[in-house]
Image (cartoon, rainbow, N blue to C red; front, side):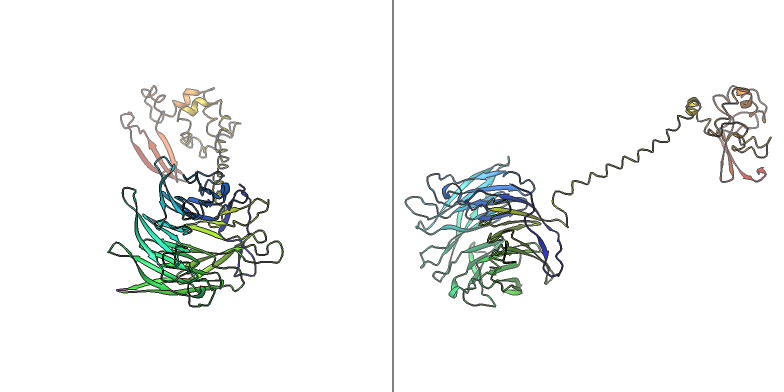
Length: 540
């Protein structure tokens, strides 16, 4: 497995080639000549890849987590070990906790290549367990039961394109999984025309099933739409033909149904057509809303898929140059915006004749693309590519978000630690008294400009500004000065108290003087405050 980029994304509507928000995020390489990626399916983040030629064509299928692709989370094989060439994994489908895998060439009971289908279920421990094997109801040889399969909710659809009960017209069987995990045959859908490849491609969404018959009417092609009704059966509701019908168009060779939008590929014309269901009272009508035609023999429309507003078209014979990428293949990506297709983009294959885009699967913003005949840069065979729509970022790259860790660099904020300069004064720092040293402001009485600035002037230590004054003062007159401050109100009694509880604290804020712990007329301290204006001439 390699994580190197294998494709280049171009904006085909611009003369300048530029990257878009679909990004290749990984590539998984299969084994030599095992047709790894012959069919792919995806549901949310669960990816299913078939490899039908593995081990003498017995086949195998792999389940990957889209976000953890280094190794498969499950490897699925048939429990019928007595047959080779069953092509287990030729067609695969997945919905929620159910996986369906076909073995259309499986033989049993002396019936050659009659075909079987296997159902696996994910248990509460996350293991995928085989729950059921469905055998061909017609019990005929060479029916190829399981040529195409589809699943949605509790309904499974299986085609047998070579069934000859009606002159090789092909049969489609609809099964239902009941509440007890029993699988019951619910309906059998039959074409009225021979050799039309009825069931070559099938799709199901909610109560609608679409069946392609690309060889009907001289290979012009037809699509049949069935609806589940109250009689507990599936009935034919609508028949679609191409608006651009001509022989060998193979309209209906590829199909994809999502809600009320249906895409039909006609690779013989290099065309896809988009239909929308219009339902008014009892009138049901499918309207052709968009047509895309390349006219370059690229097999455009060989594979199609739609999910939400995204459409992806495979063109495995696309030829972008006559050199290393001749017939390398391509996929085209569109977005439905209202009634308009916008943001046409494409990826191209990396090597000549590698059929990139033969099989594609899309779920939400996750896309899987295979080129089962191709060779990538390091000459490994059968790669499957993973893409993600991620607003211009590769899928795993959001992890670098922890880069804001450099923010701890602003930790220099502890630089206020220059407080070690006043380290000789750690004790006053503990007491809030030195901090409210606006106390020297009462000194303006002896000196009209006793502001803290002139006070450090007499003291040669301007750095601690207000604080150095208490230090020199304790040397000559440590306590006398604290006592003369209460001297304005000569009461020797508070002298023991001023040490634990200082004299009236003074705070000046915007020329307003606030006295805290005021002394009343009796000389007692009270928890109170007074506010005075502080003008040019002192307290007013």
